[in-house]
Image (cartoon, rainbow, N blue to C red; front, side, top):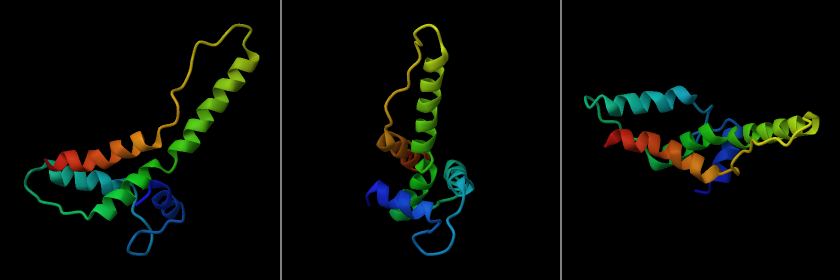
Length: 106
């Protein structure tokens, strides 16, 4: 499933099975249960993908906000600003969140 469509559904507060999508607490709960080694948690791939998209849907907005702030700072400083921000990498961010629940199951 492409990340953009998953993010669009999260923006509309829809889960893959209907209803309102759970918060970041669901991701943390699944991770903690898997890490405990006392519980087995089976989560469908589609749900993991939706959870990753839920985490990532604000990343582009926050990234742009930082870029805008750096630009405003450059406008008022009498010297060259030596700060920068790496390019937006949504796939890297999604991979992190996908892996945060998968790694804990190993």
